[in-house]
Amino acid sequence: MTLAGDIVGVELADGARAELHVRALRDACPCPECRHPVSGQRLFESGEVLPAARAVDARFDDRAGLEVTWEDGHRSTFPPEWFRSRPPRRQRRWGAELAQALPEHEWPAIAQDDGARRTWLRDAAELGFALVHRAPDVESVVRLFGAIRETNYGRVFDVSVSVDATNLADTARPLSVHTDNPYRVPSPTLQALHCVESAAEGGHTILVDGFAAVGRLDEGAVLRLAATPIPFAYRDASAELESDVPVISLDVRGEVTGLHLNNRSKGVPAGSAAEVGAWYDAYLALLDVVRSPELEVLLRLEPGDAIVFDNERVLHGRTGFTGEGARRLQGCYADRDALLSTLAVLER
Image (cartoon, rainbow, N blue to C red; front, side, top):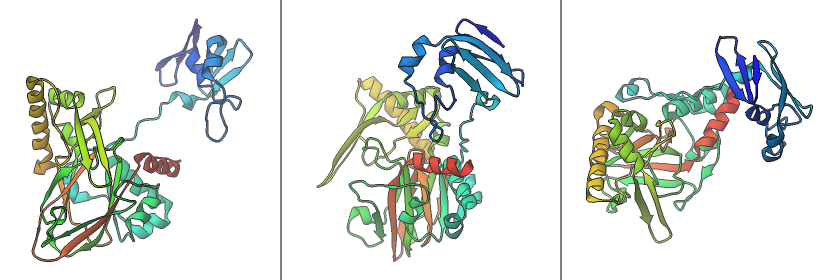
């Protein structure tokens, strides 16, 4: 272990070497004077403490961890596990092959048993969706991990489709895969659907892993779609919503974090004719990928079935209807952070 100016060098048990700035160490001090014992929130103002922070001694032991003594007499102790970064939650990308091993769960189990609920939420977090059988209603499903996000469509909305409907929204036409509500700021990150009635032939739900689809595009197309915001809009008698957002969202490492894809509500990109043409080349390439049968999972929702899915990852649509009968779903929106928080608590 070394202390040279503002840098503390530590050699870990696995042979790896970490170099840490003293201001980061002082800012991260985990002692009860610096952190709330329940929430772990910082109890001091960084702007007041860090300018004068000076380390005068540092000692490291594989069992005890790192102890830093500061010029003002304060001591910070970092246990060995502090140096092990928490790995990001694994995301399992998938295609049509997942239809042979769907993440299916039973309502009585997830409603009553923490272990079963943990497995259900883990599937939803890692795959982007999970299916529940025998659920009583969509609100009860969401209440297992969080709260409903109310919109102009209400807390819960109906998707009622009949073969002989006269309203276009309720017809038996197929729906291309899409994400919901890209015209909101922010878009809902989770959606839940519960099947109430399913008497018509057809109407299979289509799911596509949008992250797997993006992974099939060439880098130029991904960067083009991530760098160009386009307008999405929706209006009716009681609402007027609009947002400019790129079709693909990337983090600072260039990893995909979300999609906004909705043919019915999208506008067109701004820019020169050449820039717009290049955008459409990339956009149409993405549409070709998401329509590939190799990426589609088809499932038929029966009464009592409920599905929770990540609205910025998993694209959803449906096949058309034939024959007679009706299909009625109830849906609502929720927040991804609530699901991940509940899962994290169950995994402690």
